[in-house]
Length: 484
Image (tube, rainbow, N blue to C red):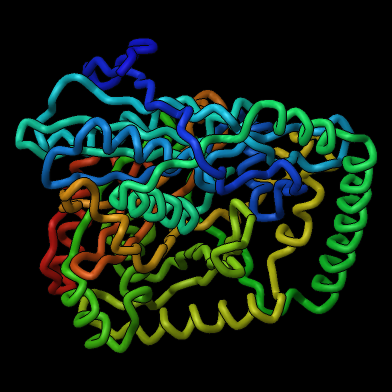
């Protein structure tokens, strides 16, 4: 093991580890002969990076109930480098053309902290990593694996990745595949040689390829404008309109641009039992719990409408090469249940939104995504941040987690959570990543776990406050739970 450099995080010295990335084998995600460019679902994250300097970072956190050998972590890092997270983005020279993915042939270094922490500090350690990790898609640093030992003998592992390179399902699937291969002791394929990348770079940057893509974006933008015009004439049927809120601008409610966080775990059987008794589903109970925080905090008093944004997985099988394959739908709740009430209203609203999405009914902004590649980002900032269409709650249900994502080196994950945030939000500017709350849920055979971030400092003024609100909400639903 070779210490490449030293870094500091949460007052614990760590080391960048040479993980032996010169292993042999076939690279599973060789992009040298494929023209894979950023897609419609990627535009948000590219726009935020270019226009506002934000990087949206996703994170998986494991607390494993035993030690993980250094060699195992090194092999896991190599397996991740052979998977779909490991890419590099090339910005084309032709205006209007989309950036293209190519091979990133140098694996990011594994980071192992030398010091131990108390297990109770695991969440703080992981949150600091998510907030400070430096990722760069154009440099091929789209992800990073980091680990630290606890005094109890447990091991905390963090995997961070740019949302630009993976949506939630992609990140979980990639981690599960890498962990399964590591536990089998499978040799990790070597990243492609630099020569292969240079050949692809010449193709990807060719004026012919870029010109074709730029022309396609102009055509798509024209079609999008036509669809918006047609939808306007038809009255925008099936599309939830922005909800007017009697609140101050988010910059006034969150002057420091910081988030409060809380995480809850509930036995899966308990979660399903309460959802069924209320006439709902696991997902509608998730929405009810998260939006309940907006009521109990005072953010949205009873009677005020709550706009809920729900990402929907649109991936076409495991071989779908897109980095993001989600579409968003919205519902508006005005009479959602109090704890113990019926979930029928939420369930019905979600079904209507999913049916509308399947029928191609989308908000106007969804039809204008190609404009991102044609108009300078600075010109678009005012357009996309105008109005009051930001959801009060964003709830992302990632669903069942593959069993392989909870096992490594003979240890089992006693805690597992997914979450995300935006790095680089400037408190001196009027833009914020989120308004009320954002939440992400994963499900295993044993536990339903969801992380909640409070974006409004006025109503979620500390981690402790948000945890108390979440604890009270789950207790009111009669759910056995742990908040951490």
